[in-house]
Length: 77
Ligand SMILES: [Zn+2]
Image 1 (cartoon, rainbow, N blue to C red):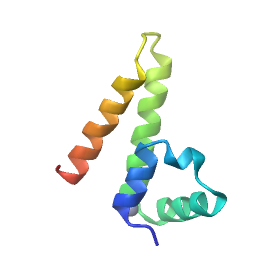
Image 2: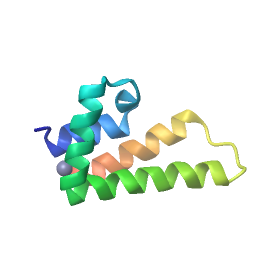
Image 3: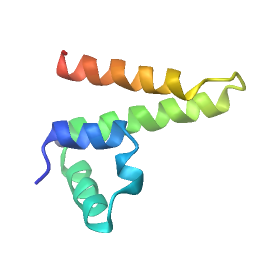
């Protein structure tokens, strides 16, 4: 079973996009049973949607920085 830290890392980076079928399945199973990670995934998804909805230009760097802040908040780095 993947740890929460591993799941968050994969979701926040683009690793999940390029993950194998087995990896994606493991992620989905974790998200199905872990409230914290599923909430985090929804927040990220919502943030991505908000960025798309806004017609302002947001650079990839700003998105990465926002993701980093969220992860820092979760893990208290
Ligand atoms: Zn979790």
